[in-house]
Image (cartoon, rainbow, N blue to C red; front, side):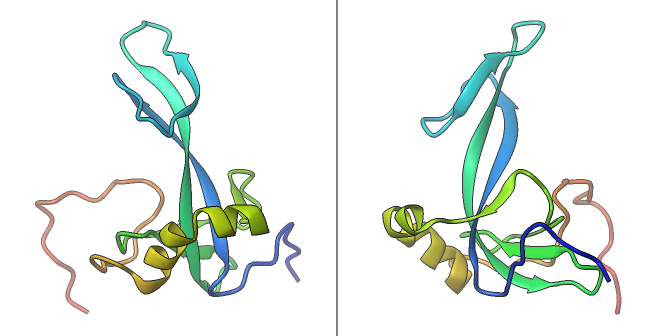
Length: 123
């Protein structure tokens, strides 16, 4: 039996603190630090996602408000359930993720390792 720090269920509203880097951080950027060479900034951004399902391996399948899907370990310290205040304050973002708002894409990992010129898989 696998024990997890958090017990997520489909439909749960969660916040994933994503680490990013760019030359110009956006208005929601937090913990902004200059990179070692000074060309980029490293920062974190809170993402408001919904748990779509739990995989057979125990990983959490998350849906973004634009319909993308990411998988995460339930014990990932960057992933947490949204508290009441955050659920109320950002409910429009969570509701957009819950409805799969704009598009629905095939499941993907948290990394972007797929290439656009790869042929589609035949199932």
